[in-house]
Image 1 (tube, helix red, strand yellow):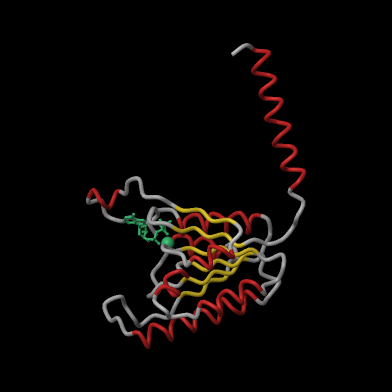
Image 2 (cartoon, helix red, strand yellow):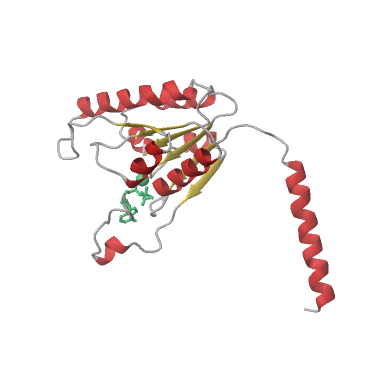
Amino acid sequence: MSEERYQQRQQQLKERVEQRVAEATKRCGIVIVFTGNGKGKTSAAFGTAARAIGHGMKVGVVQFIKGEWESGERNLLERAGAEFHIMATGFTWDTQDKLSDTRAAVTAWEQGKRMLADPSYGLVILDELTYMLTYGYLALDEVLTALENRPAQQNVVITGRACHRDLIALADTVSELRPVKHAFDNGIQAQAGIDW
Ligand code: ATP
Ligand code: MG
């Protein structure tokens, strides 16, 4: 391609991008979903938390995982001011007790609901929420309503595999992580600092 033709193309591209940027005039909080079977959903959520805290936003996190194990992100982000709520301990994946699992999920969700009604939170992360809907621990309608009625400037990140289609429909940005390869499939152990 000639230098002149290259410059012409780049100029056209620049104009198109500038036009699209100029057209994006709305200012409101958004719902982001990180889903799919590939690695990177929770890390992407906490990457967003780091950004938000870096800009002085208040960040609240609810993790819908059983057991309170140490996570690198929590160690760091709590020190930086993020508020963490982790689903109640005392249940493990071995004791699949629907009633106690539901209770634990509902208790964690109460924290999420509270944050979704409080405009002081600029970012609310609902990590692994999708499973609570898949297993029927939480009512889909209640979750959708809380998201729809949240403060206009509040952002939400939801993670987890097999996200319900109604949640995808409600979200503004949805990224699906696709597993091209994963070290675990090659017998490599999960590692602190990389996997949690
Ligand atoms: P991460 O927390 O690393 O961002 P994730 O949130 O996308 O991963 P989850 O489905 O929540 O993944 O799984 C949690 C754990 O399982 C993490 O330790 C992650 O590294 C691991 N993991 C994620 N995807 C896969 C996969 N395709 N095969 C095996 N292990 C995986
Ligand atoms: Mg995850």
